Image (cartoon, rainbow, N blue to C red; front, side, top):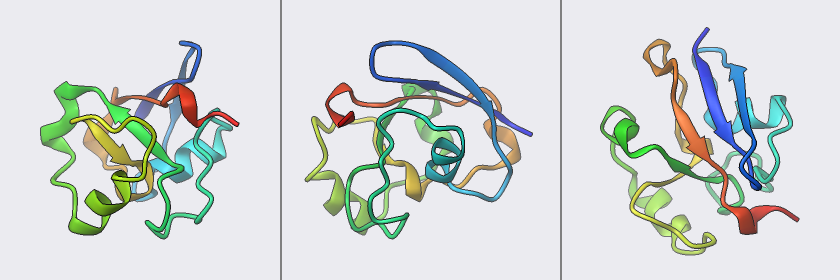
Length: 107
């Protein structure tokens, strides 16, 4: 199983195991990662699962689709490395993927 590194608001690092084929959002929810709210349940209809992907990984995750681009416009402080975690599917070669949850996303 790939290991994913989440940097939670406040800076704590959590390394969790992820099943191949599920979304990054599902992994975050399964492990109680702070700030990944996923209010729409993964339908790409909100931006509450927004994360910042380590720039070294961006090329390996594929391009953002038009729908994701549109939703990121409503995310807290979007950056060039912003992704909606519901739109990233875990693959076997993602071991070590590092993502940061925006501080302002915590309720």
